[in-house]
Length: 137
Image 1 (cartoon, helix red, strand yellow):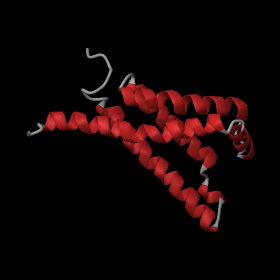
Image 2: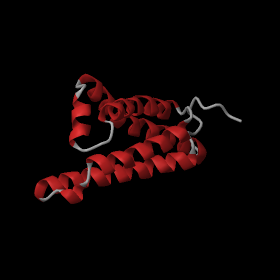
Image 3: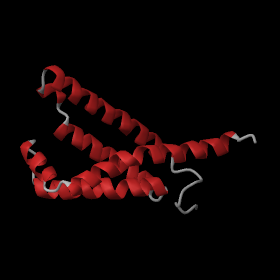
Image 4: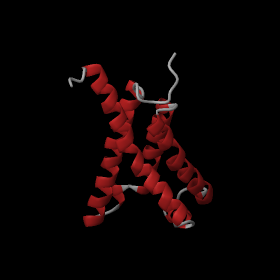
């Protein structure tokens, strides 16, 4: 069976959506399972309103990736995740404040998040593809 480029691009968009979502869903699960650990962590990192921030972070990580998987309001979900990831980078991965091995670990996490934003940006531009629940105009 030969797959046409248009069909294969829709399959690849689905794979991309499915590949990015688990990172957020797993993180949301652990935030809930280890609550109020996220609140303590945010407080220690100097985040404003750590309780509210923990609730918002958990909700974002639970809801937006599901929309990404389903391809439902996917562009908005991807944009929301980009904003969220950039925000978490500025709060949690300030590698320039560390030294030695800790700095390397924070730097890798920071730039992994930047790469993730690049993938989410591609999805924002391309849309969810044919294999989605997004209504067609």
